[in-house]
Length: 296
Image: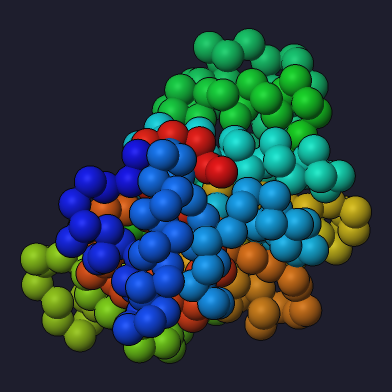
């Protein structure tokens, strides 16, 4: 269900809206309030159907689905969209922020049915996340034969960069990793400041954290780019935290590597979404009320 409070609904759908445009969207949402979740197309602030969104996503080589990692509703929505894309004829690969690229053999073994879930869960935890958070997605990937693609690198490296800066890495690592420098959009700078929260934000600490974020974005974009070059028929659906999925992050790095057609879908996060003022410059679609049920 959508929020019962008209005030909260105004905040929710009024992102960047004023006057008659807000009123039109508000009335559409109010009339459809019996439906659990809706999709807001940010380019024109129109509510669109799942079928309309999927028809557009189908045109992209990369579809980035943002998430809060521990929110099961977000993962249910992600699975719904992956299934819808596959049903529409896309040859789906699921790209995973939560697996390192050097764990690709284990991901391949899982999809091929050569690992049990207990072992796979151990490998997942060694990478980062408990596989149970994504269990239905992993099981469906195995059943449907969707390749799983590890996109990330060691969190130990990113923690070192966040604490000491990119140039603190060994010469060997610097030779293997892409060069990063904290040159980001104003929106991304603001995001980094919020992500650091109450931690003391000296210029050095801000730059280090920024470099760590950009290193994640850049490595994942590079791994995506390489995979797409070798698998021209595939559509990669990327599951990543909102801070990496939005347009200022992985998509910017993809654009720097070449011409890759992508789309960004973010879930509404009550409270946070309103404060961020999500616009078409941040994402293509916003899933409203996703915590309440399936997307329609």
